[in-house]
Amino acid sequence: MRISTDQIQELNHNGESQHRRQFQFLQEELQKKGIDTETVIRKLQDFQVAVPSWALGAGGTRFGRFSYGGEPANLEEKIKDVGLIHALTQSAGAISLHIPWDIPGDPEVIMKLAAREGLVFDAMNSNTFQDQPSFAPINIGAPDGRQEQHSYKFGSLCHTDRSIRVNAVDHNKEVIDIGVSLGSKSLTVWLADGSSFPGQLNFRKALDRSLDSLREIYAYMPSDWKLFIEYKPYEPYFYSTVIQDWGTSHLLAGECGKNAYCLVDLGHHLPNTNIEQIVATLLWRGKLGGFHFNDSKYGDDDLTVGSIKPYQLFLIFNELVNVPGHNPTPAWMIDASHNLKDPLEDLMQSLEAIRLAYAQALIVDQGALETARNANDVSLCQEILQGSYRTDLRPLLKEARIRSGGALDPIGIYRRLEVRDALIAERGLKTVATGL
Ligand SMILES: [Mn+2]
Image (tube, rainbow, N blue to C red; front, side, top):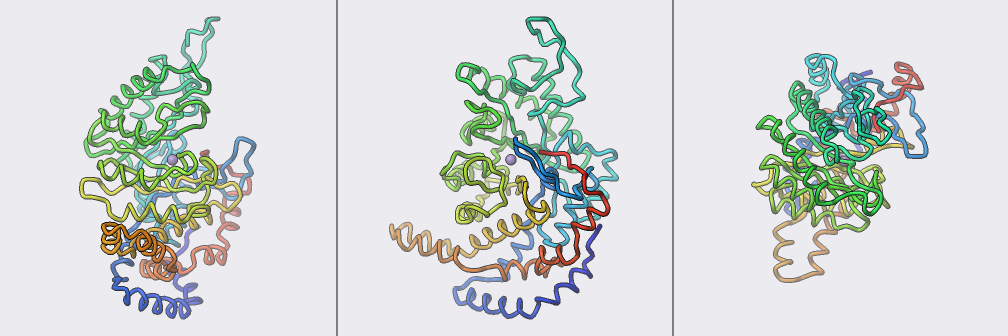
């Protein structure tokens, strides 16, 4: 199924006069404050967020998974689903693949399909947190001498057994090769490696081994690629994680080299962590490489972006609107999982929340904020930030979207066109997307 620009434009007629009134009112209000709305709209049009291939189907929890009909069963269908989201929102112009779930049969065919949908390939993701059926059996030296597969049960890049580390490094090299064939320019490494019980892991040796493995992967990357090192404080292990926080990620990235960066996943922090401060610190060092958007209440809940803590998202964007020259533009990606909602609707809600927070941050009077800070006028600092945050900028988002050929109301049109029913008719009710 595809949605044409003509279809979208026809359905846009419905709400257009109301939108015009709301947009003009907002534009006048913002112009009174000296805000150039055209610049904001252009920045919104340019802002593209990658959709991960694993978020297009229903996610599961450790207790179960309830599938959603019409899920994409292969890479081609995943690309088409992102194409649908992009056609409606004009803000999801990239897809991020996870290997081995998304190995392309013929990279050229896949690239052509993506280009037809207006998509490029964002960061590649490796998977060393699950055992893959393709692993060759080896002797792991178990006391009873039994033969077993290479297994990541006790870690991958940090594993005590060199042959398993080599296996994990080789997998990452293969992911780089696939990425090169698709025109991707970066690799995200997230390690599940860690321990669940005190004493299980020698922390220092685990870091040593992880660094050696990361260096090998880094050395294999083409010189115009970036390595993103993602951190997470716990899960799947519950006592320690080898790359537990931004500091560890930063140390490892620094040891690897200039093209290695930290990746911030919003859900990978302990409750109440000041993520905006972490973002500012990494930008200060020029080491913020990528961003994974989601939202959470308690842990790595992977909920819709902006559904729980929209103010925090705005404060993070208030740091991100001023990326210093020594830090490359970060790679933007959603990393969420949907258990209850239609995955495509959920992704469109996430995209909207990201764009809204970005727009809110763009209208902050940074000069006035800096003056208030320098004068230690704490109340005024808060007034400035919350004044922007509480301005309803949705008409600006709509304007940016329709100027780019997208939908005035993406979810409304998605429902009007009965896209999910069409996908179910095409793919069946019981398809299951590969992924988390
Ligand atoms: Mn992530």
